[in-house]
Length: 228
Image (cartoon, rainbow, N blue to C red; front, side, top):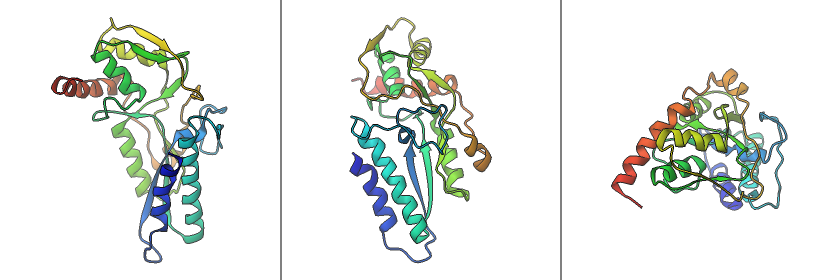
């Protein structure tokens, strides 16, 4: 996975092109570059707290390598780049069984299954609706700021709060089950989006309580057509 996370970006910047090149390359990096952060909320200047040999490290380090490659080619060859550090994003048309927490909870609730919350349930994430994220990426690409720039919704929720919100929306009777946690799972995650506000004029508009029903309706329709 580390190789996959960086090889595509290396191919993009090393492909022959006219000099100077009119192209502008977007790297969709990730909040995972911050690892299990000791700074909260996370600013772009924070270097992170990543376990380089942990079970999650291949993705974290792959994206960190990709950022390094992008900036090296930008400095040495003048290639125009834009780097977005994307925090958790959700919305309609996501893969129902992709393993992400919002997808999991909505699919489990619609199927009448236990909502499986990884222990202890107090770990936090921030969830950005897909249309807000797309708007941020467009503004970044059309602007003059290289980045990296955090893109995410600073609204912060514990996993238990997210589970209870999904229950309230779909089926208050479904139980919540605490399961073993993934090793090296970050305890907290929240973007500082000051740069996005000041440099891009961007901040998310859709709250979690506004976005979840739109995703739930999409999942419900697809599960009714193609029950699994």
